[in-house]
Image 1 (cartoon, rainbow, N blue to C red):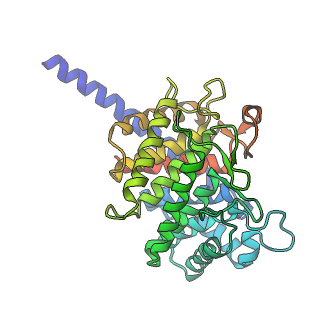
Image 2 (image 1 turned 90 degrees about the vertical axis):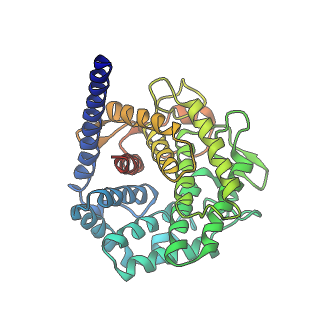
Length: 361
């Protein structure tokens, strides 16, 4: 019995050391980020995820350096006006592009640290555009841009975090209903019944979906579910079907996790390269959904294994590598050949995941 006690104590100490080391890496990424010029970062989807991730580091540490840096980014962009921010001005090649929406979520996080009427006003105006200005499918899901007639998995994370959070701030239950509907519509048309994973895109004009179950795309799905459930009451009429969707997707993700604990850029093809952002997004989504009681606790261990592998494989000197470049729907070769590097959306996903890990401490 004494030998068992000391063996258990040793394992606990090793685990605690690993957790402290990984937390130090997480904070080193945030610290490296704030040494750069915030005004050099665009108002776009990757930057929106990155700013949201940094604000979650602020939420865990209350270190004002992080909020101050994001405030400089916001104060540079917000005065430019909504049409410019949303890319709806005459010079924009993709009017109504959803990638411009997610930055509104970062403003809501920033407003919690440094309340400012302009932040909440701009985020609210972005939400109003999503609700009333975006092209919508017959079932009510937003298109990726004006005249696109396609639902992409990416679009869900451009809308659901913002609308679900604002649904509580502004007492707008229809915003939350919108998020749930978008998720259920995406499952009807993009989730594969065999693997339980999601394809990248569905075109509602031709009732045709793209060919690949994309890694980061499935990360967008699980994050969108987690952020929507954060505000969805358990007595909501759509709570049960959305919970079933989350459970189903989680089973698919678990089956696709490789022996090292990570996921690949084509999730159902382990010959494609292992990819950091898909892995970090799944860590975030799983841990948040376990914390909210949506998923069973067995997913926690799988998420922590992925988190340890992420830090070991891809995080060094305050940089997050192994992230695939921006990706459009294509054939499988298009995903296999996308370059890898350090990108804003990967850094943001990593910071978000680390915040959920830190909540467990």
